[in-house]
Amino acid sequence: MADLYIYYRVRETDTQALLPRVAAMQRALAASHGLAPQLKRRPDSKDGQQTWMEVYPAAPEGFEAVLAQAVDAAGIAALIAGPRHTEVFMDVEPCA
Image 1 (cartoon, rainbow, N blue to C red):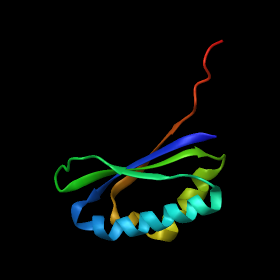
Image 2 (cartoon, rainbow, N blue to C red):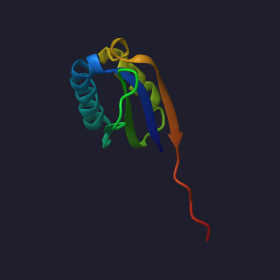
Image 3 (cartoon, rainbow, N blue to C red):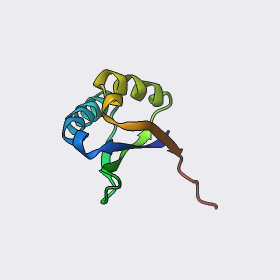
Image 4 (cartoon, rainbow, N blue to C red):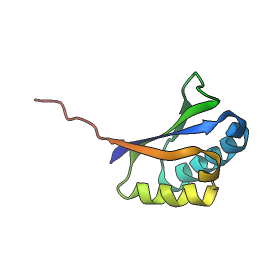
């Protein structure tokens, strides 16, 4: 398992249309995969755009493909400015 962090830019004019789509997608993914997704944004805006981040802690192997299908089905790409960027982080085991 790994934690997925996906960030992207959203035009301020599209935030009200995008929010319900992302929220519904995350609710469905939480129900089907037992996840606790989070949605965050930077507190500031730049050039009329916000930066949003979806967080999927403890995502199972293969979840990135499931997420890509969910993003397509929700029509999210049409409401963001540019690509979605994915970062994957894993827990570090402490030294004995």
